[in-house]
Image 1 (cartoon, rainbow, N blue to C red):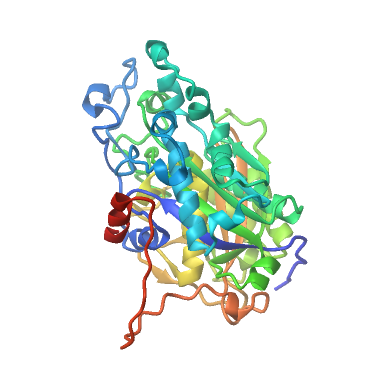
Image 2 (spheres, rainbow, N blue to C red; image 1 turned 30 degrees about the horizontal axis):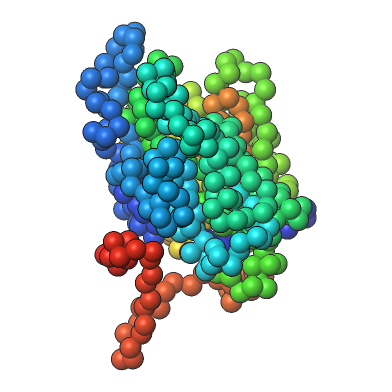
Length: 478
């Protein structure tokens, strides 16, 4: 099979922090996916009264069409002292800012980086964000008397990235990106470009979504985007819209050569990425299959791989009757080229498990795929009982898993793609490569090995630290 020349330096993923549904770290997140768990739930009481706002009739003003979604257990808890923030200021901070601070710390911790030692360094922060419910609440007409000196910095989207840079004293590029549902994968793309351009030596990239108020869910209900049962059913005959979801994810990125030199553990390697736009379609929210196909082909070209070598794609796969067939046919057109007969690419979407995390959806897919490459396992695709009749899987070089499988054997390195599309037409695709002793491009000592759990007779010191007694007790308990 023809091997293309790679035009960019690979970027290593050396740390991951995430919160999706009940999962509070990469390990529990991957376990949730492997076990085929549907982590959606009823709207928590601390968000809004689901029954008061619900109506199956979309024509009724002020009502939303579902009472479920992919919610985090809680978003109001925050250790302000840990980050050197006063309780008064923290109260005005968007929960999305708070989550991104926590998840960024956890990602750096996972990467073996000490934030204090990075103070003043050229660390970049690229954060995807989309909806700003907390801003709407604070600046609402009935809450004008509550506007405070901290409202502006607490509610504006720019601070989702800038707050991280400020708290940790990072001096690299710092930007919040809104391309709707593709925001966090576009953030990863821009972070990789910044690393290659030398603007930063380490980058934090990701995204966040919190549903603090019902208004945007009402708007999406009126647009007909949401599934009445609050569940996404990717590629399925029962697909009838998506379920909204909360979540936050951050990856720590370094140029591969620097990660190797530093002896960093590596989850997976980003070979290349691309972004584009649908342009004019039948409607501003209607995707373009041609644009998606060109995007995948360009990402492969920049990565120096043939599309026929890709073994798995984490699709956007929201479970909409219109969007899923367009995406799958675009994948088939791009990935079918130079693909050996009978070698079908696996596709999947985590939105069946946790819902559509919108601005955090792209990084969620990236994290899932990096974990699949690390563990060499691919989780099942939830709610896929019968294929969407508009998707002729029997004639396409693609297949969907109903049960977890080992990563496919192949003559080349393990390769995967991640799709993410914004509902306004901004698209992103990332090509990932697995890391193993057999991969010639990555030294074996840079592999992220599992923690050694073999029995031993010797005592081992396991240090824990926190900035208050209460936080230490909670940390020990976790």
